[in-house]
Image (cartoon, rainbow, N blue to C red; front, side, top):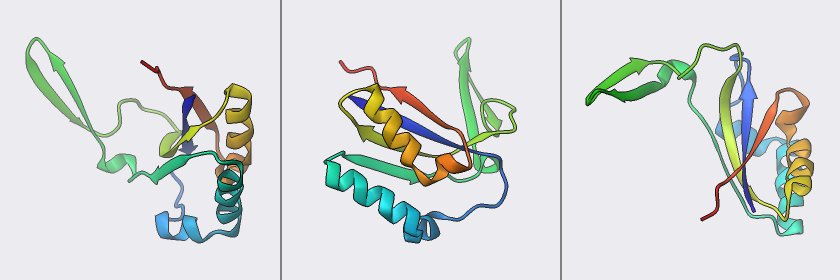
Length: 112
C-alpha cells in the first residue's frame, strides 16, 4: 500500500534539499529503506509564501496568495512510500529524521 508522509515544520529557517540529503541521519534513513526494499520518493517544498491557492466557484477561477489555511505548522515536504501495512508505515515515519523535531502525518492513497 502507498502512503504519503507529510513532513510538517514551523516555518523556522531549515536546511534546503541539498543539505538534507547530505545529513548523516537522512542518509541512514534512506539506506534502511533501501535495505528493506521500501520504495520511496520525497521532495522538499518551497515555503508557503510562494504558494498559490486556486478555487473555482460559480465557474470563476479564484486565485489567492499563500497556503490553503492559516496555521502555525506548514507542509515542508513529503515522502511517498510503499509499505505492507499501516504498522510498517508508522515504523518508517518514526524513523524519518524530521520526526524527531516535527509532526509527520501519514496518509494512505486511495488505490483504484
